[in-house]
Image 1 (tube, helix red, strand yellow):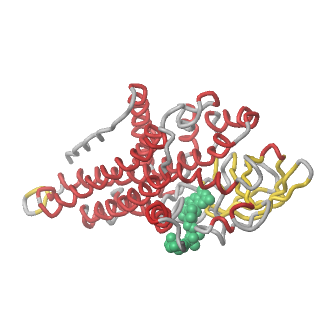
Image 2 (image 1 turned 180 degrees about the vertical axis):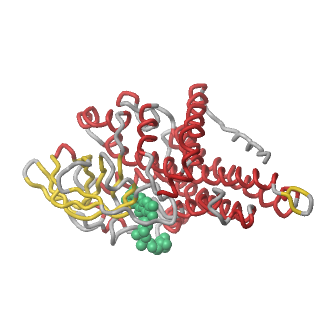
Image 3 (image 1 turned 120 degrees about the vertical axis):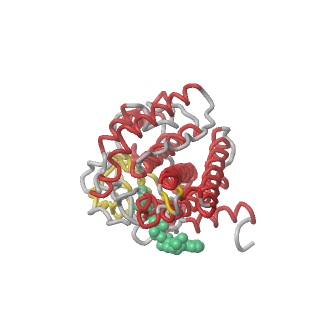
Length: 390
Ligand SMILES: Cc1cc2nc3c(=O)[nH]c(=O)nc-3n(C[C@H](O)[C@H](O)[C@H](O)COP(=O)(O)OP(=O)(O)OC[C@H]3O[C@@H](n4cnc5c(N)ncnc54)[C@H](O)[C@@H]3O)c2cc1C
């Protein structure tokens, strides 16, 4: 079977250092991550050792300050790293994105002393993080969360249940949004909770449609005590920290979506140029050629959109609208492109012998996490048309 190598992605990278970084990531992705992806996803195995390798290679804290063990990379570089990792295996790309999200509160709103004490282990010391906002009865309406933290002297006592937590039950640290005051967004505070805190436990992982290697689980907090110096930011500031973390996190999801879509396109091209019907490769038929052209165009548009948002962020300018647009466009594109890839592979596309069906199952979750695509449209509409009910 003559297999055609996919066209390399034309990347715009700002420095020689960034080009070297992407080359290193591609090598790790192709040598260590991609070859085991299908089998381990099928078996529901989380590749913890890959995260250890990424940490040792300086790839778990890329957008954060080198002073605390980060990589000092701009978002436009970090996101392209995520794209490569997700193309090899979404469980890894999304896992790195969630770890970055979980580190955000401390890295951007922590006191200097807290950052010195905890960040180096989080960003380059092999630890794995989880971000705990959602609850069984509060998803899109996250500000109605009920997990409580009650002050007791110099400590806080946390009780409640978080839901859908990526790395739930296996993480080394949890960034937890809990209610410390009034109802609504102003009564929420952020805490950094160690994974081995007494009273913290992970439930059995959810049985998901895809990304089965990535554990998603409820996390129970049963009288979990943390000292006040593990409170991040001011009391009542937790929800605004959580939302600003999500502005950046959504860019990570967008980049992961482009990675999955690119992998599906590469697979579709590979297959279509080899599979022959009516005496010709099926890639010769205009019906498929136009599908491939549309897939490639939407992927390039998605990459350009997330990079434009990242460059605004890197320049210190507002980027929330563009991040929501990038998340919306890139994840809808991933769903469409992966579905079309299955179609291009015909009956084989519907089997687990080829990765197209896995990409399609994986793409679906990206339209749901870190704000569903309905919520992204609400965010964008507020920027475009102003708040509702004026
Ligand atoms: C695999 C996976 C991993 C996840 N990882 C994490 C994690 O690490 N940390 C974390 O905190 N959460 C995580 N989540 C949770 C995720 O962020 C939520 O699932 C998501 O925010 C949606 O919440 P929900 O599932 O409760 O849906 P709901 O909010 O109940 O929404 C149900 C439907 O109603 C729609 N809807 C809701 N409100 C509106 C509205 N105002 N207008 C229009 N439509 C609306 C939604 O778009 C959706 O279609 C994860 C979820 C999954 C599936």
